[in-house]
Length: 154
Image (tube, rainbow, N blue to C red; front, side, top):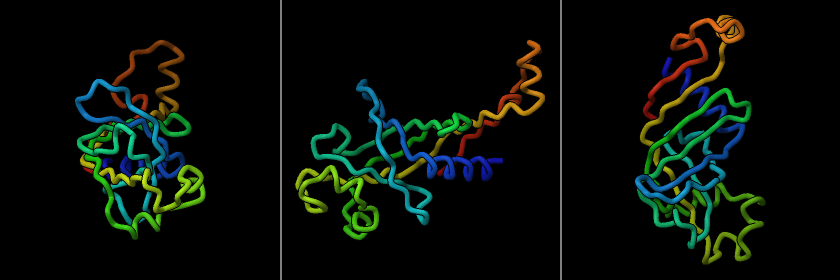
């Protein structure tokens, strides 16, 4: 089951790569970020941001994700680090990013953060016929009637 739910997570994130992310242990609100995915990197994703963004310094972080169809939810823990590999920046760079940085890839206000993933809790919301029947009739729900839950290492 864990491998299936992990695959579902990566597919859902690729379809809608928007997460809310914040520093672990801080009282500041999490902020929306657009995850840059690399099909060959299943233990990290990246964010382009500005040097004055409160996450630019890196450190332990948590990200929350809800899929486009609201049928998969995830809470992901990991560590934000400044990405120093210029090849990664070049590979992830696109016109949507360029629109934000007047100086292009060499803009002094540009930071590329890598989110090294540790683990996640992932929930799927697919009640199936039995779950829908129970909801409609007020029958007692049991774990698994509305979907699956897994703790996975990413």
